[in-house]
Image 1 (cartoon, rainbow, N blue to C red):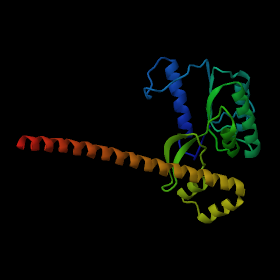
Image 2: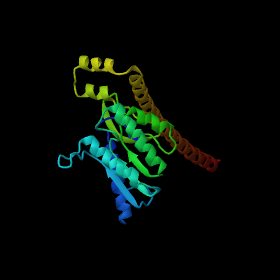
Image 3: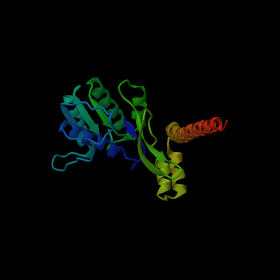
Image 4: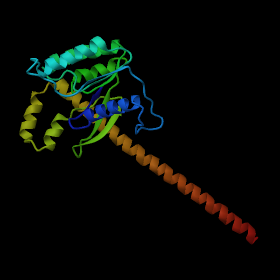
Length: 238
């Protein structure tokens, strides 16, 4: 379950995994780490983009549900599925409820997949449901820029208001919008936001610490070599 800001790389991540999987199953070499592991699946199911149709009287959401119906009816333990913006195209509360049910059914069928979402209820569900793992696309709130990096194990904030500030929307409008948001919802999104920024700071400090440790180790080795040289010269002098 990948969440995070718009234009942060959720869909690109989903498509990249799908492309690599198809390449592997076609016998092609893939650009991955040597320790990477792949499964082999009997069927791949993909729902990305808007497939509404006037000809078949399908709205965005009815088309979405039609695809989900196919997924639920045909998925099994050898299925790999990709769903972009699960539950989108309808009322967030109602669409989010259907999205939970759909995801629960796919988990029951032991199918493997990647889902992207902005829905808060799905992030909460993923955190407490065995078999579902949260993931988030990193975002630099200080500079208001996506980092195109996937963090496994935590849900991500959509940074709705931060992105609005980034594009220069009037701050009075942003503040008015904030007041209209349910307080609990806004508080949880801020918590996700703060957690992500804290993790980034910890990661930065960890890199700095590792760099200092390596530098210290290098200096210790250098000092040891100098001491051996001096000892040798001293001995020969005697």
